[in-house]
Length: 283
Length: 255
Figure 1 (cartoon, rainbow over the protein chains, first blue to last red):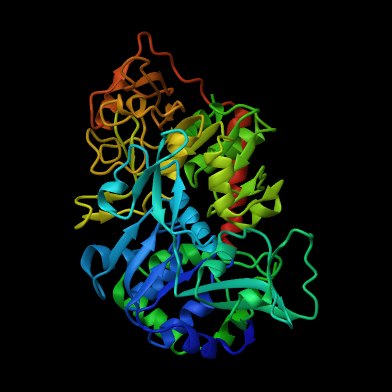
Figure 2: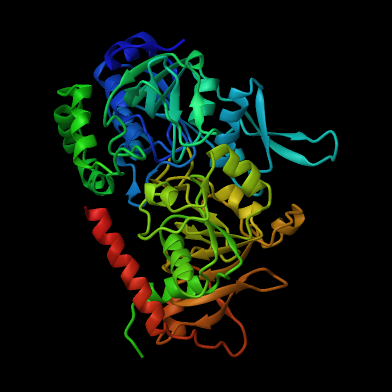
């Protein structure tokens, strides 16, 4: 049942050391403010799940919050490497990082299986490639009707699912518009959820009868954090800050520079800092 | 003849491979530039699909990521990511998948995962993303990549997405119904698979490029068809359209 609280309360109440956490948002609506709060509260030993780790997991992993990463594409989109993830995988800094690697199709299917309360997902995938040799969780099943051999992956059932959305109404119903990724699946697959939103409104006013709405009884904590998806974006609120994604390549390349940026912009800040981004790059 | 860079020639050769009635799954970077150039020149009705769920998108600037807001705002419709991979890609609705990559071999298998051992990587690359399933579920695959000895390698350390398989036979043996890589557009030349061996074979050489240059930038000894033609040089319209969209893109991303 939806419960309004501050972001600090929402993270403190829902994210515990050692949890399996999925922060989703496919390029759009990435819950950066929530990720920063997890860093500030010093969570450790997390298993982080995300199709595209993006800068948010580069930051969490660089700050030593995670023991394991489950992912399917780990770069800075259109720019290059996520240097902190590479440093963790290649040099075990700041700590060793176990990885469980999939393809996008497999992870999308695995979230959907989680939402559908199934134990595994089935897909026509991983044909002729090397990932199944290094990821023992990728298995196969023979179709009982046609005999076709199909790939399987276990359903994803996170302890906590964290997403960002445009708006919630006062009852706690949440509306997602634009590129909706797999956030609906993540929320329905997770034991607990934290949703940050740009605004809280009297009435959702969805543009279509078929909009993606998460009823209030499917979500947990809701915290209003305007700008909370920056440097990703919130359709109808502010644009993707592509110049920041380009700048991150340099900011994150060296350990000292990264730590200094994180201290100034995350550790010494509060969620309210995100509001400036929403205003600066208003759509 | 207008002056042009090898990179411009690559993008233009890649764009020419696309048809007006294609439904194309677009990879980010070089493929995205080529697909949008095709849309803005000879293939105005082409359907471009990005894995973020945007179907029939018509961006005015090239997206930096596969999920920029521009893609959603200019799309016919936007579906969820699970639906994109299940109904549209696996459902067999895509005629062409357009991929890039970090490394490729002579049978057009691609590595974007790792250099060195998987458990102790020398270079950790981003990984497969959509590519492993794009490679087998689209009708055919076009690839665009700049040549170089570190990119065009004799043996891949890791196969992220299958071309025609490590010996050129595996795709057929695995009974994959789609055609796999049918064209590879580089900054120096264009490859197509030999119909028997499936080895990527040079079918045209870009203007001003020599066979020595190609040999210096290829990790295996490349084969040529008989009487290889020269790739037609970029037209003034192709070059102008490409430079326009790149200038718009640069200005937009710096903002």
